[in-house]
Image 1 (cartoon, rainbow, N blue to C red):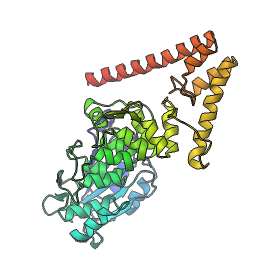
Image 2: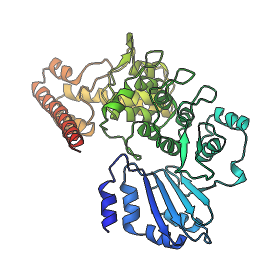
Image 3: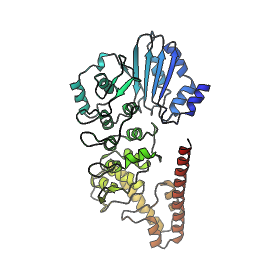
Image 4: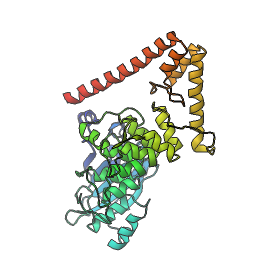
Length: 412
């Protein structure tokens, strides 16, 4: 219990990524240990833990059954690699599970299933959607992007070449493109220069903003593996990544607004990125403008929900109706109704609306009229005072939360 207390105390530590279980006599003994409530609760609660390494003396029992049982108690939303070190056979067995999957996939490192050549590997890398852990391990066997140290294929004894490029991209760039967060966590055990531009002039964070999901961005920013859509507080090092500009002058937020997934855009916003930022050298090119002009209506919806002004010349009347516009249409109707309720002195409706939309502070209508201006134009001074008080309180509470978290971070 003392050991578990020590582990539990570190579960929020960003450096706590690997758990080693040593000196178990058999697979069954190791499994009995992992069936303890303390084990799987610690794993599920640990913010950055994704790798479990288990040393077993007796290799006569294959660990498939034990791994299948673990799949039922380990958090499905967490990426995880389990490596069995079969001490007396010099053999390593690896199982992995991607987030959102139920079952583990076995990867036998000594198997012919990983055999290929350099030409085949580079062809695989160039095809989008192919990347996952076995492909990464194959590249390491071929000394592409890194290598296993010594003669053993031990995942804890890997050296990555953080500068090697394959067809102009580093391994980490291919992983970001294919949204493989588990392989990315594994790569990030090494120190990668994330401000580095590859042979095509692109940074990994830019590729992630365009192609990846929230978990890819979360890993690059060293945030918890199961980061959700809530406000996140970054260190200065990670904040610097989000203000880097590509050759066009766009930040990761602008890239995500124009080309990325709505949940990735929402995640970047939750990381404190300024939704009103613009292209370097051109103040007219904003996130909402890029999303609107590219027809990324789900991204427009995400930006409006976090208090962006409406884009210029906003008009949905000629837009083809579909699944990606339904939520936006409803959002516009709700916003218009909100401003209308102010004109009609529907105080209870106004209170309900601002309570259910905690991120809104301006609550613009499609003509980019701020809600406070609407109250003044309609001479609704009591509603103005109510809204001003609520919005001021929101800002105050957010500032206090930030100060509190920064204070706790500095005291560690």
